[in-house]
Length: 117
Ligand code: HEC
Image (cartoon, rainbow, N blue to C red; front, side, top):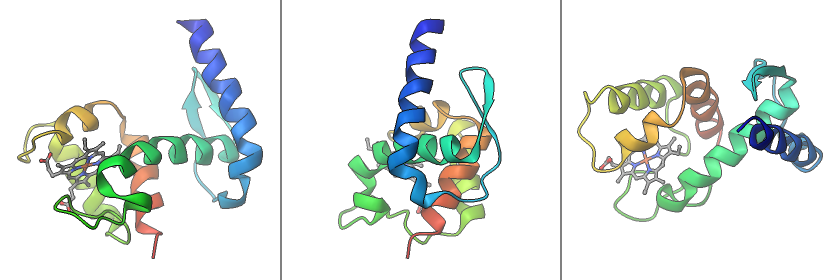
């Protein structure tokens, strides 16, 4: 388990070079149990966001029945994720996804999607 996490962290370090351009003043994130610099946090957020694209469309721009996330209000996105996690919002699949991430990941994902025009 520890080894796996170290590999993930190493992969994120490598991905940083590619994703570095989108670096923001994101807070330090805890990955693999230690604090990582903003560039690693940004890469981490991007890799999670890519899994959202599968249903919510590329860059969160949906063309189907599933609501888009791009350009949505940051606070709205965070609140929605918390409500899904707590079962306060009706969902078919989102409760499961919401359970997979923590509050700081909700925050960075919301910031990521809110910033997309
Ligand atoms: C398997 C498809 C699927 C994936 C993957 C997925 N979603 Fe969803 N999402 C949905 C569906 C369907 C809904 C409508 C609520 C429901 O039925 O669960 C939704 C609704 C939402 C909403 C509410 C939007 C609104 O306008 O009220 C948010 C926010 C959201 N998803 C965020 C995310 C994020 C962030 C991720 C990635 C971590 C993600 N979703 C991944 C299918 C998905």
